[in-house]
Length: 535
Ligand SMILES: NC(=O)c1ccc[n+]([C@@H]2O[C@H](COP(=O)([O-])OP(=O)(O)OC[C@H]3O[C@@H](n4cnc5c(N)ncnc54)[C@H](O)[C@@H]3O)[C@@H](O)[C@H]2O)c1
Image 1 (spheres, helix red, strand yellow):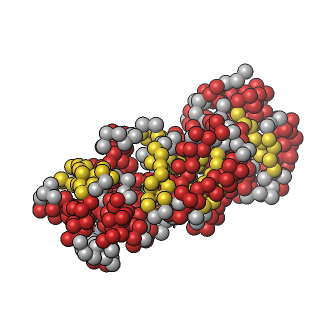
Image 2: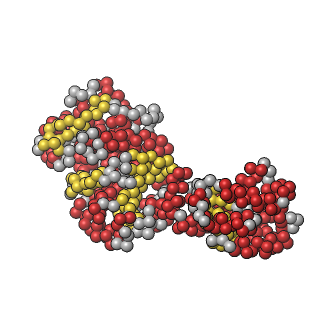
């Protein structure tokens, strides 16, 4: 008989002093599922300790209580540490063996005695002299202790090592159930259209991402995050490390990547394949594009490693490659199934680069009109993490109003990007900083166009500088030759006609519009704002 409720229970049994509680707690922490101690549960229910119950009611009554507890446990996966005698009752042990992973922890008498001496806990069945009582107890229980799924001697291992081995076994046996457990206890899940977004402190367990994963990750993460991150990456059996940045998104280099990826993916089943992208926006764009065209499209999981990607690029399904210096000319819209926003991973990004996220953050705040916080937003984990859910929800509000960019609504997300992309290409600015400067341009242009009043302009400029620390740095940038400016604008993918493109203007906080603007007008405005040398 299979009892559904116990499918993903992990049970630790063994003699007194073997460390079931300590090891059980470590396992529960690693697996993200609750820890239950049978002795504590029984004591809570009876209102007296197990030692008192034994003295008052006898051992048989205690075993009956234990069996009832096992039968009554809910249907959530958990780590259960059981009292040393619990599995000596055949029917209780068989019940556990049918529906749980039953681990028998073992240790030599010498180790157990030394641990019991240090624990200071009263063990009624070992009184008055544990040294002589323990061998007798072990001999009596030997057949029951042997009748488990896995026996593990702890004599030469630390509690952490034992927990690691047990968790590995458990994940092998219950990969899917483990995922459900991890998600429900360790992370906050939100659904936006076809995408699930998880806000989690930890990195997701690789086993929980599917059985056929092709990991594409930024090679910097092999060194940037230290041993823990390296170990996590190594747990993906099929991996492809790439150097981040715009060259990765170059269409000309794509066929070579595809050849290598094809070889790597050959043992995997395409119908079950998930591409897992771990990195910043460039890795996400590259891996997302690959996933959307490989075998006509396979499943995609994003695990962004930059704040910019966590706030913006990992959401909304846009994947793009560059053609030469022209950004994002070849692309698809294919939504990631799951996006894991892992604070542990994002915290690795240095503060100087975390700052790149502020441009996209300020952009979505202006579009959404949402006053998420009255405190200045700093390029630091605490500050960025606190606004992340609001920023992500704001982006999906726009994306889901026009998922495939057919109604013009999604174009609002290009605010700051028209001139931003030119600055990114010419001055090799990080994307986020280029967008921040593009926001300054768009705000001044909006006032020049007569859609934004002077006091609203001031309010928005104050927002950029005092809330997001994004100062107007146009005077620090060398002027761009007019011909180059025009050439880059004419290649902009928001072109509306030969001589015009769609530009996002701001009418106020939370009020942006897209409108057709001639390239000549943009050139004149860029000259007025001193971005280009001459008109
Ligand atoms: N698809 C979209 O909707 C969308 C939206 C916005 C931006 N983008 C694209 O995103 C890209 C910019 O994103 P980005 O700024 O994340 O760039 P990126 O991927 O180039 O990463 C920036 C730098 O940070 C490093 N890095 C990444 N994670 C790190 C970590 N945890 N610790 C230390 N260093 C780390 C990278 O190696 C790289 O040097 C651009 O190509 C842009 O076009 C796409």
